[in-house]
Amino acid sequence: MAARKCVLLLVTCLAACFGETGAQKTFVPLVINTWGFMNATEKAWTALSNGGSVLDAVEKGCTECEAEQCDFTVGYGGSPDEHGETTLDALIMDGTSLDVGAVADLRRVKNAISVARNVMEHTTHTMLVGEQATAFAIEMGFAETDLHTHRSIEQWIAWINKKCQPNYRKNVSPDPSKSCGPYKPLNTDNLKEMPRYSPHSDEYDHDTIGMIVIGANGTAGGSSTNGALHKVPGRVGDAPIAGAGVYVDSEVGGAAGTGDGDITMRFLPSYQAVEYMRGGMAPAKACQLALSRIGKKYPNYHGALVCANIKGEYGAACHWPGLDKFPYSIRNPTVKSTTVELVDCQQ
Image (cartoon, rainbow, N blue to C red):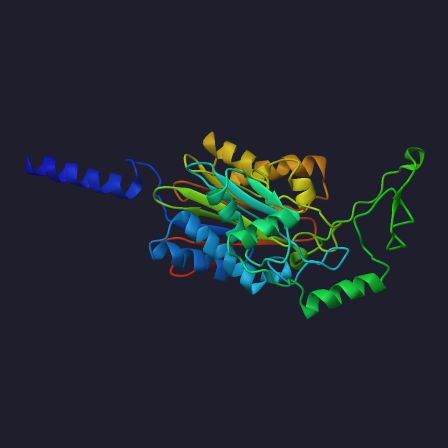
């Protein structure tokens, strides 16, 4: 009898540690985000450690990147558009309710991820855009401020002095490869396929923090960016689009991406990766397969995904010509501090 009790106790202990006998050990909570934005990862982890929710962790983590101007691709003072203005896109998603809040083309307000959370919690909408998003933010108590910096102004002036090269225009007159416009559309008889400009040529031309937080009782995800450098005013990429930049489901896990948002948003890779994991696929494989669908259609596509399931298993994939390895940051109970890991990029 004593021996049987010992065996039962051992089985109980194993089940507690591994979820079910023979199953892989769970590693939650987990914070994972694109790029080596370690301070953002650590800020999210601290929020969890202090009793905050998964949504709190995502908001705190992305806010850290906005404040630090992570590689000048997140937050104020980066990626001026054709008019020299910095605008912001952000999204936050609750994996349990599947509620989403997002802002796009947000102007003159620094706290994009927090405004997105206010959209989710104080309206029945999913996204607000442009000047109306700014008006909503001010109504919610956010400060209106100038998003320009000396660096962003100098960057814009240098671009103007190079006759606005490169840019995203096509099939317009005057020739956008030689002129700053203003532009008019070409006659439909004169339309031709133009080489597509992508700014994502190397490690330092990326954009967007995408973050997934897996907790014991739920998941959340978020993203924040100032978009594409020298974009056409009003352009919005994948970051604030649920299923494109970020997707989470507390029954499965989550995925978040970075890269060429104009192409990414056509394929909803974050949603697709979560659905692959729903079918039992490992996170790294889910990321890889979701990106391969894009690469098959657009061989020169630049993008990466991080994926995690509710067990805390995680992985990443990268399709990025010219970039050897894609860095991403993680924090879970098995590491003493935030760690940057690397995944090989498909060329």
